[in-house]
Every structure is written in C-alpha cells, then in structure tokens.
Length: 504
Figure (tube, rainbow, N blue to C red):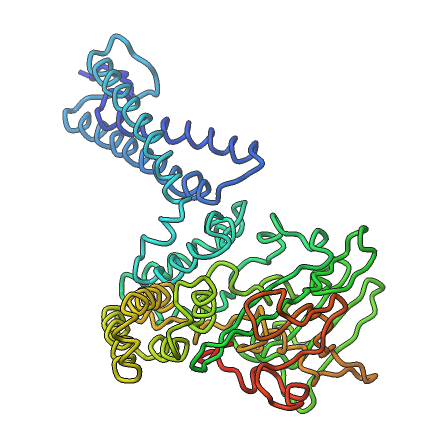
C-alpha cells in the first residue's frame, strides 16, 4: 500500500529557527547601514567593515545553518520511510513548527539587540584613536605618543590614514591584514619604514580642512636657540614666512604655497625610498608651459617609462611629519630652556643634555637611569658648587630630559628623530634643499630659486631672548650667523655643518 504524502513546513526544525534569525537580523541591519552609507554626507570608513564584511558573513552563516536544517529534515524523513513534501510556508497547526516559531522570535530578538548594541560599541571603538594607537602597543607606541603631542591630537587617525568612502578603505584593510600577520609573528620591521607609499593623496585628506587657496599672506614665526657654551647663550630670530597662496585678496601666486595651487603642477622623481634625493623636477604653469629641472650628472629613471614613479608634489612632501614628529633633542632643549623647564643658569646644560639624550640605550629603563645618574654626576665632577647649591634645578632638569626622551625616543622600535627626517625646514635635514639647492637647472638656464628671501624675511635677530633687544627691520635683514664663520653661510647649505644630533 502506497504511503500517504505528507506536507510539512521547513521551519519546524530548531536549526532553521537559528539560521532564519541570523539571515533576517543580518539582512535588516545590512539594509539600514547601506541606506545610511548612501544618505549621510560624512562616512565612517569602519562602517564599510561592518556593512560589507561582517554582516554578509552573518547572513551567509545563517543561510548555511538553514541549509543544514533542510538536509537534516529530509534525511530524517527518509530514514523513517515517510513520503514528505517540504514547503516554505507558515503552518500554525504544526505543534513542532509553533514551538520553533517562538524559538525563532526569541533568538531573533536577542541577536538584533546584541548586534545593535555591540555594533554601535564596535563602531565607536574601531573609529577611536585608542584602537589605532594602543591595540598593537609596541608597534604603534611611537606613533601614538608623537600623535598626542602634535597639532592634530584631536583629529582621529582614520581621517588622515583612511578618509571617507569605501574604495580606499579596501586597500587599507588589505595592507592591515598583512600587518596583522607580521605583528602576530613578531616579524615587523624596526623601525616601521616611511614614507607610507600607500597613503592616499593629501588633496583627499589634508585639504578637507586645509586648502591652499585659503593660505595666503605672511606669518610671523619666532624662535629662540641656545648655544652649547657655558652660559647657554640665547640667539633669537623672527621670520616673516611668505605663506603666499592664490587668493583674490592678495592677487598673486607667490610664496611657499605656490607649490600647491590647483593651477600649478609640480612633479618630481625621487631615487630613494624616503624621497630625500630628488634629481628631476617638472613644473607646469596655468598656461600649460612645462619646465624641467635636472641636476647635472645625476642618474634617474626615464620619466616616460610607465614603471617610473613621477610623483605629483603635494602637502606631505614638505609636511611629512604633521602628526608624528619625533622631536630632536636640540629642539626640545631649546623649548625647555625658553620655558624654564630647564634653567639656563646651569652651566653647559644644553651640551650635557644633548650628550645624555643622544646616547644609545637598549631600553627606556636604561635611558632613565643613565639620565638620572649622568646629569648629577656631570655637575659633581665638573661643577661641584653647582651640584651642591642647585640640587632642585638639576632635579627639575633631569625630569625634563627624561620627559623629552619618552616623547621622542623608542628603543624597542629603534625609532627616534635620527631615522625620521623632517622636511619642513632646511637646518638639519635637507627638506627644502632637496629641490631648492641651486644645482637644478633647465635647458634654457633657469634655476630653481635658492635665495633665502624666496620663502622668508628676517624681521629680527640677535643674542637675546627679548624681542625689543634684537636688531629688527620689517623690510628684512641680512642673515647674521651666531658664530663668526665669515661668508661661508652664503655658499653652504645649513646641513653641511648642522646635524640632527647637534641641532640648532
């Protein structure tokens, strides 16, 4: 006798309830986030991680579980010898189905609540500075510490390193996966190589806040330096920086930010990974006229070869350390002496401080002990009277030196100012002189400007901390070197004498 055909719903198995709940919950949140991604003007790059990676995984997992429940129900029916036709339908008369319906609704409610709560928390966490700077503590500590001491300390890391939208996010996540494996295997380079060649163009990140057309006119910058003599003698200089720009209020395209005006285009070829050696530069003006500057005798790849990287000059070529500046000890000491965190009345404190900070240490603890013992030992040996009468000033100077070390030296990652060139000057790193060194000429004899007054005027200078005591002129003064080096400064670059270790 032929068995009666039975019709059942596929939703009567517990695994179907779980799989269905995952599919519906994941699909609902996916649709909401896609709508949010389309609607909102400001996009969070980590939303793409949740929307296009995590949620599809949850939906797929739900589908697999539901498929397994189907297979299990079919096999169970065959094993019992039942002739069953399974349907995707609601069957309130089926007790097993109604039991699993309530199970499904319960699981669905729990999953939705957990996804909304944990998703919002994960969204906030992955978008935070702590996530970027502290998750991989040893690797990212140098960047995290210098970031918190930078002008961009309130700008989230993702705004610069990833930016809005999903396209660049995919590339950054691909790089992140490789970095994750290197970190887990403890096989990451020390120090981390720079510059970051995968960083997106500055026009898509930096210029969301800073755009060249709005940087115009001049800016006064004041600096006080201290010499390495017994009295730590000051030398101050006030510079009028020709910021320039292309704004209608100035009616000119001169000054430093001429490089970044949209109407102008500057390209270059660097022959080293750090982009410090630049033998070839191409400038294209608004009229389309092209001028190529090359360094005589220098070797460089063919600009017309598709394999050659002809880089378009952007903000990061000068401002290469806007958020992760590893402060040179000389610069830190100048600031500490000016603010009196370190007393200039301690003889040769600048020299002693430089020697202690520039010494090579294997660990931070070793550095702390050496600085603490070394400074007092220096004065006990060289100036016993100072060691006896100025204990408080020496202790304060010691604390300041340790603080400077912790802010700029990371021996575990072999990272400090000596491996992090700062291109926003030309005193101890070539910076501006990579192009403006007077050696690059065009075919018609033009030279990239090398004159100091191209970028700044000296408004005041002299051996004092007080501006009123300095020689000054709004029209600009001729540079006067603090030490008597005759006219050598006219023919030499600053970096021919000044090193990052000695500073300025």
